[in-house]
Amino acid sequence: MPTKPLKIIVHRARSLDKTAVMLMLAKTNSFRPNELQIAEEVFDDAIANGPKGDYQSFVAKEKRNAIAWLCFGPTPCTLGTFDIYWLVVHPQNQNRGVGSFLMQYAETLIKKRSGRMIVVDTSGSPRYLLARRFYENIGYRKAAGLKNFYAPSDDKIIYVKYL
Image 1 (cartoon, rainbow, N blue to C red):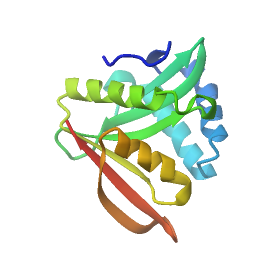
Image 2: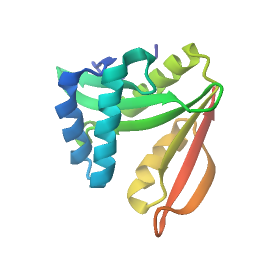
Image 3: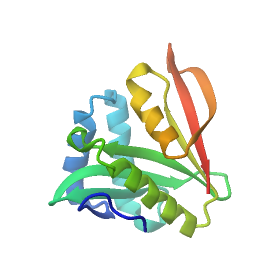
Image 4: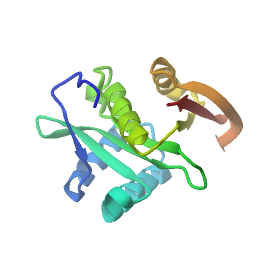
C-alpha cells in the first residue's frame, strides 16, 4: 500500500459511515440533488454486496472523523478496466494529500485484481477545474471529451491511466 500523507485510516465503508459520507458530499457544493441520490444508491449497493459487488467503497478517517470517500469498480463488459465512480474529500481536508493517497490506494487494489486501466469521468465546467488539475497532476491523461454531455455547456471529460 502507498505511504499515508496523514494519520488516516482507510477501511471498507460500513453502514454507519453513510451519514458522514452523504454530509461530506453535500458540503462540497459540487453535486446536483440527483447526483447526491446516485451517490447514496452506489454507497448502499457497495454495503449490500461487499467485496464481491460492482462497487468497492472505502472511507478515509482521521481521529474517527470521515474525511474522504472513494468508490470504484470494474467497468462492465471490459477486461481489466476499472472506473473511479466517486472520490470526495471533505472541504476542510482538501490539499492535504488525502485524494492522492486514496487514488494510490485504489490503484494498488485494482492492480491486485488484474486491472490494466483506470477511467475517471468528470465535468468540463469551470467549477471542476481543480478536479481536472488534480487528476492530471497524479498521472491521468485526458482521453476524450463529450460536448454538452451533462447539460448544455457542461462537457464530460474522460481521464485514463494505464497501470
